[in-house]
Each structure stands twice: as structure tokens, then as C-alpha cells.
Image (cartoon, rainbow, N blue to C red; front, side, top):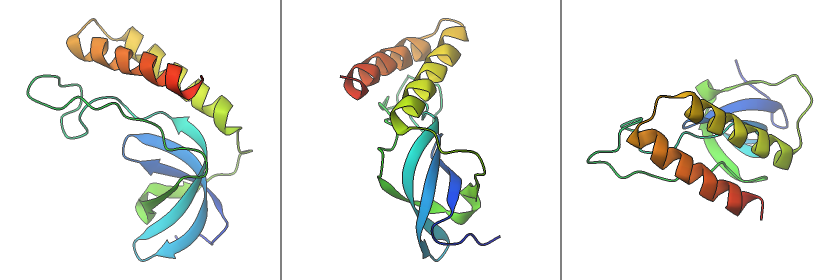
Length: 126
């Protein structure tokens, strides 16, 4: 299914999910301008989820408001709801990530990921 330039879409990028607007078509990708955050990216190593041994544990930031990302067409779908405010959506998505982490059983991954969430929260909302 081909989307039109200017369409408001849901876009999955790495482990995050966003609302955005299609700016360009680029072969197998769309250039999407980020308007809101639906799901904050998971913390840690993308290739070794929830692992902490022998991996580089990344702090994963959400894409910024109006940031543009090349997103595979297969990861883009129609978004029919009202576009949420970026800052409010970022706060909600980060809180949901925190809640998900706190529900997990205690582990080194949980400890490091929650520390990243604390740092991100301070940085995002200073």
C-alpha cells in the first residue's frame, strides 16, 4: 500500500513507535517527520535485547520533534487518530516504559534500563 506525501502515519523505528508526516518517498523508504511518540525505544543493545553481559548498553533516546527519519515502507501505516502533542506524548511513552520495566523481576537489565530512564527524564524535561 502506497502512502501519499503529507499523510499522517504511524511509523515503527527500531524499538520505538511514532506519529509522523510523510515528507518524501525514497525507494523502499519514506522520509517521515516526527510529530509525536507512541512507544519509547527500549534501552540497551538492539541486537541483544535485555542482555547486559559483553554488550554495549545504549541509552536510547526517542526521535525528536520534527526530526526526519528514513523509515522502511513496511514499518509505516495509516494513523487516523488526532495527533497528540509531542511533549505530552513523550512524557506518556517514557512513563509507560518505566512502568513496564518496574513490572519486570529485578535484574541487571532492569537496573540499567531504569537508570537510563531517569537520565532521559531529567534531560527531556529540564
